[in-house]
Image (cartoon, rainbow, N blue to C red; front, side):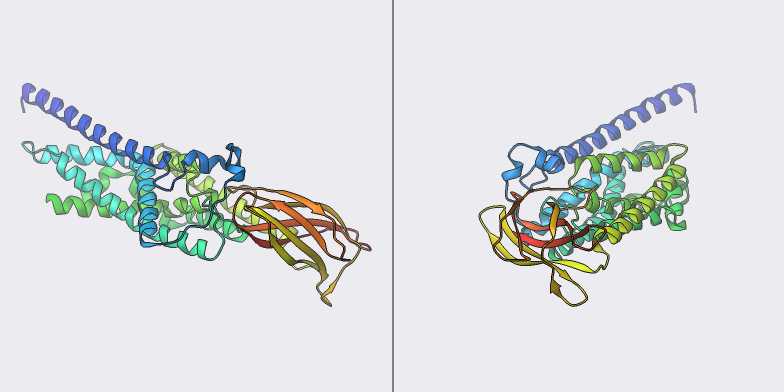
Length: 381
């Protein structure tokens, strides 16, 4: 190859790289814009992220969605666009290398088409995850443990998600998939297949490795909030760093250990303070809806041993929320009101939002050294 030929080839490669980068940036930008605008859900990501911090949100009633065929399609599209926005930046190195190898193997052919087909294969793999995530979202909502703000309202589910993500970060399968993602040129050399069908199969295979590397991390969106902007950006940045910087694999292990510790502490705290069996439990006796997001709840404290109500307790604290601390928490206002029935304690609760809520009570019981803390779950209309 002469010096002139080398110069021409370098110029062509620079042009190819510029085209691939421009198309990639355009796709990622469109995906992010659609997410920021709410992905067709009717509420922007900023509104979902900030929740009650946005003026007017406190009085907005959000009914659980009806899972029609159209809504299933919308949720699938939202998940798929989110995966494209979060994962394509980390796939940029292999797409650029693939375009360059295509050019060097066929100097008179444009590499853009097979590179695009490779990217489609990559996104199809994440489309399979998006279908699974949509089905999981549907089931969690059916079980009543996913809020209308798209974050889990269950301490145990949240802890399980953290533990699963953390443990997966430390498994050999995760390590193998991460090594593959961190060595794109090795994959291209060893797994090269010619033609457009070969490009699609290569993209699908690489996407499958990437899926194995990151699918539990993406599951963390059920913990932090499916459309929580902080979690989306944070996870996307972490995936990019884990795959590209020199210490990425070590960072992944450290983060995995942190998730395990976080999940264990959340589960232990919940078990010890609220969910553990004790000598007493709180029961909801009456429930009355008084308008949008306004509910009156009558509660009594019962001794577990003989199922007898306890009179004369002193309520020390009362609050309500729709999610454990650290998740997309939504809180409301609780006001104790007088009751003419002994052992029955009434609370006027304003949440501004329909769904399953928890009334968390702490009371002083005569003869007990420590306060009794417990929860009552109720449906706000």
